[in-house]
Image (cartoon, rainbow, N blue to C red; front, side, top):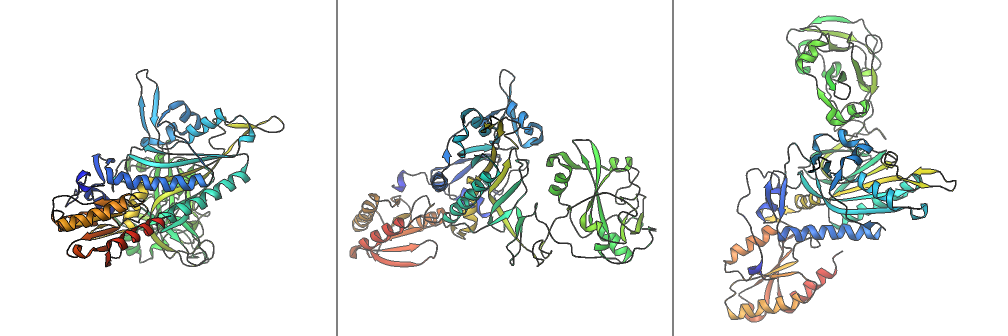
Length: 569
């Protein structure tokens, strides 16, 4: 490809809204352009890389025996109502009506569509198991789209769905996809961790996330170096640390704490550790319109995902109570506590095991001290706290570590969550209709593209791995009008252009320094410079990743590039 015929839209600066490296570099390198918040157009260079990522995914999915289809992005309300997700999915679901007043949504996921498809197409148990997948644009009305392709309203996703006769078959399909994902992300050169995960709005009985390690990741990864336990922040658990579990119970007392509303203020005023205080948070369950008190230790944070799971509701159905709500239960903001409170109480297991804790007295400027679970108040006990670094591993008891990660893939054991309500069944030997057992497997393709950049860039620009780079190499003539330099550049270009090497010849009328900056920004893996030694048929080859430069003859550089491309996996 001649550079003069290409759309090369590099920028010196990125918009102020671009904060993370991948967002900045995708825009500056002319790979994407924002249309509106969370929605992007893909320019030729960006699309080439996106297509290569998709091709690696397709190759490994096909090797695993999955079958590619393409379904509609438009989904009827009826299917979502049948699965129970029309209301539960919340405001992220993009809904609309057609001219006949029939309701639809733009698909954020496709569990209902694939289940309905298999229900109508699979006529015999002999057709099972089967795994169907697609690569398609998804839609979610994100409240705050940000970080470029990391969190958008429109994004490209690979979603697959397995259909098995029983749980044993699902386990086999799940493990096959687990290994397939490992192969995909390894081929893409991503440094990743696999962690236990919450099933969220998709649901099911078990899930793993594939996390690209990055400081700009939106998720905390909790892991143990000793036993390899790993989970995301929503799912992570920890052993109880034994604090205040064995001390003798004392009598409850009411103490004055004038205008001391926060944990820090109460801790300082009473000269006690924050671990001696229980944090009491009041929420409203929108599905029942009831208030619920959630208790964790004072040095802890409430894990909202664990709370909604305990209540068996969707995440958007839980909101913080208002000051008016708190007054209506005869309490005061900053002094809420469980003693004598007549609403549902959820108690973290850590609090339930402690003795002589401090809680709000539901009376302005007062707290109770020496309060004990079961004796002074009651509630349902769950794991409700957010696990953090240096907590104890739930498996082996060693200290947990924490890293940041970007979720690039997630797999789920759905079981019969969708097949049962949508009546997707097969007929067994006795003629009984049995629900098909399902799995779901997603990869965020556009997010994966950003994740690769987060792990592969420097101050000059992107450093694409060779197998996903938009082009493998670029020839930069120092002066293309010079007959000798032009002849050498054309020779290398013509020889490589007839091979599998994807080569660019930069024949633009621009200074060499401008050209070099462009290609370093775009991230082309090899830059071939034809210049002062062209009369000797010698060029310079620069490795974009290592920045190493070496002089080679024209034929040597041609042979080198052919070998590099032959070794691409």
